[in-house]
Each structure stands twice: as structure tokens, then as C-alpha cells.
Image (cartoon, helix red, strand yellow):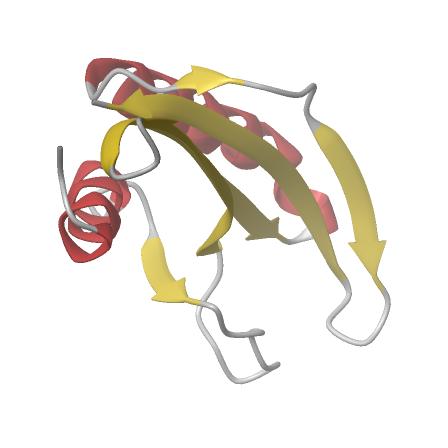
Length: 118
């Protein structure tokens, strides 16, 4: 079973070559885009005899920020994220949602990923 730090590093290493990545932060207008943020969403555990952890469900969210006039590049980056996350045994747990951040004038493409840490 991997530690939380190892899981975060694994996700970071998988996606860092796709675009600039930051942990738990909101981009500012001075940042270079496209840009990604990621965060650990939840964890639930199954316990054996109340003591030993046998599995943990780990879920990450990756937000991809792209300019509205750069949607094609954003879609390509999203495909690269999907490939990278599948390569480290995560599955997409929700459909891709898109939002417009009016403060940044950027489209946010949200994906959620999960896997069992056993």
C-alpha cells in the first residue's frame, strides 16, 4: 500500500509533462496557460478486524485551465491526461465537466480519477 505522499507524487509525475501542474492552488491571470491543478478528493477504507487496512479508495481531481480560443489544444491535453492516468491504473470516475472561470477568462475541464490503494 502506498502512502499519501507516494500517491500524490505518482499522479504529479504522470501528468507533469502535459502542462504546468500545481497542487491545491487557484491560478492567477499572470500564470502561463494551459495549466493544471490537482487535489486528493476523498478516501475511504476497509478494515480487517478493525486494525489492519486492506484497501483504500483514493480519488483525485484534475482541473485543466485553457483559454476559450484554445479549446482544441485543451482537448488534446485532456486526452493526454486520460492516457497518463490510465497508465498508472486510475479510472475516470466521472464525466468530464467544463466551466468558464470569468475572473480568469479560462475554461476549466474537470476530471475525477480513482483507484484502490492495496
